[in-house]
Image 1 (cartoon, one colour):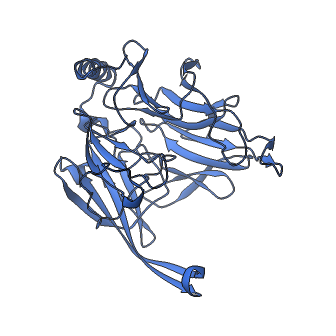
Image 2 (cartoon, helix red, strand yellow; image 1 turned 30 degrees about the vertical axis):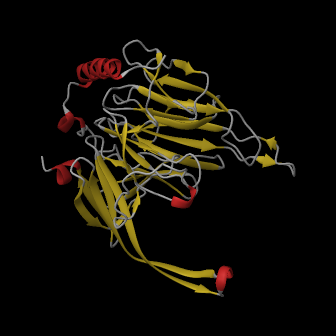
Length: 363
């Protein structure tokens, strides 16, 4: 049975009450952590590397002997590092796996020591709980080589303290653990919520699971090529903006106010990456990037080949959907280094610039 608006409000209030009891913090406190210096990335050769922002020095923490490593993150309390390591697949001419890939979730402490590993689940996507004590993830069965993610096999919660692994749903393709109500949201054609109070799965009327940290808005990401990314208001479940629109492919009647196109592309908007456009772990700010690129090609007509591509500048825009305006602009490429989510790390002229929540919000 689908829950109505009144029930959603009750669930939201109860979840928020429990969350505030757990972390004992309002929004401005939520962006603080005891060790904000934990900033890491993955480099060629499957090394996890830590960065000292103040000195620019890099330290290799951990080396994986697997074929590929990806999806690195730092826990919200800035104590742990997690990433996925993947074994090399082998396929036959019919596109069937001879050797299927295995995706393991690895959890390190800040020094690079392995705290936990999940080697018996094929982890596609994962997300930290707001208190950093648990990780939720979705797993998949091996399928044919062209569609490696089309066979979801379950959604799980792993407790870092008790090492308990709990199956919370038989299948799901996407997952999110939201800050505003401390609930797990799952998507598999429809959106369901794991109630943080009862721990039961409930249906919702939402179109997608990528909520702003304060819960006021959410993004509906494209599931099919050519569909727009859409911005919704959570309280009304109403669509506010089409952020990317390909008019020739939109079904008749599916239009909304187009988002300003002069501020570039929504950052991390692909559904395999976090944080899906939202920056910081508080508030409701969207990050857009716009590059000034010079491209040199050779050939004519549809057979042109790109010879060179030079990025002259990158400008970034932080947009507040409540005010419907850009509240901050800054230049520089968003770095591949990741932290606990309380800051944006920008690389500019070989140096790192850190932009905090307070720099934008002004408090």
